[in-house]
Image (cartoon, rainbow, N blue to C red; front, top):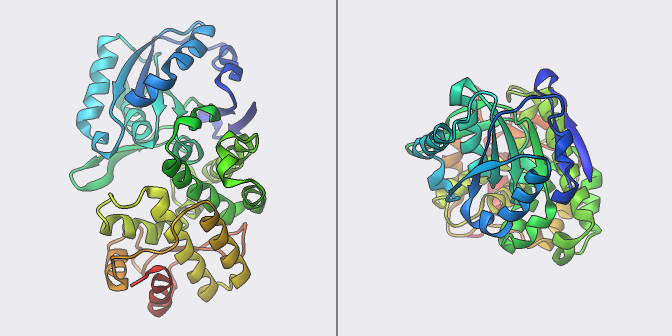
Length: 360
């Protein structure tokens, strides 16, 4: 088992990565008097792995009630939060209780927001079951729901009390979703950890999900996220580095109705656009661009988009919520393992970078 620590003073918490049998749950909240536990779970995942989780909790003397919900963006609503409140009230979970989240990023956001607001905040534990949530959304404390057509419009920063990751559960994840999660891992390597890129280059793509290297890959990706969150908990500075590839990626998601691409697939295309822009603006070498494009292709991630135009993407970028008063904010890399933020990017360079990933 690999253990990391997210150091945020009184809000610090451990991340344990390894088979659920090795989590040593009895030591998790040692010396802390806890009340009742409740679990919010993805119904499909619960069918496959719920017995394992209950066994692990039971070995630590924890009994928990369970509320199964549908995964997917439609669940990211106030109505779902109210269902969580109703369950917590029915199960008499008080301020000393714990809400555990067993599923992907959407449920993590929703249940985390419920935990942040129920009785002015209770502990919650992230138990992510998708690669994307393992390496990204489970750490950092961002919670929230959509409001109408506005994504993540209502939310709060509420750090988990622990993050528990069992990579073996990824065996049941659809291959496309696993690949999608790898885009976020590759992003972490680009902005801060070249050794993570090397680890992915050294492993056979088809074998990664069952490889002993998977724990290391998850730990290195999460380590990047943790180090950034420690420096910038509320997203005012260096945490923007985590948006590398997301500027064009979000535009592509929006233009295709959030249906054609999984999040990581759109980010993969956005990564290539950001690399091209980095080459033009901050001097990234062509060798580095080609190296990452080869890695994206190797893991079956898309690097080009069809069916939408350069002009449509440029228009969507102008609506990007990360735009500053002076112009579009871009996260770029002058070399693998480094990142920088700038809003001083000429429009013609942006157009060139977008055109690089659009197949007319």
